[in-house]
Image (tube, rainbow, N blue to C red):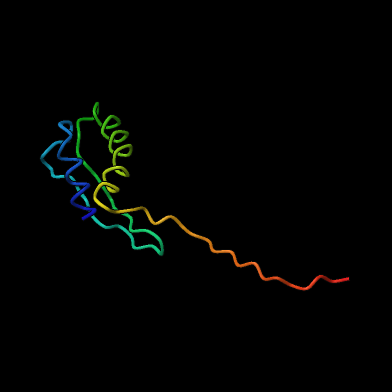
Length: 85
């Protein structure tokens, strides 16, 4: 599903060239994330525009698809110990 969301975003950008097709692949399976490599092809003058726009849009679009970013979580347990005199 995440891969399709990424593809849909890139397909909506007229600056992304259709040939060669964008690369969208799982790069790494981490303990709290799945890292993707996303490489759309653009004209050099359009690269940064697409880069910033995509990075600004991806979290919102993943959330709309029901996906969330697995941020690290820390559980702290406080043990009540007797006071020492």
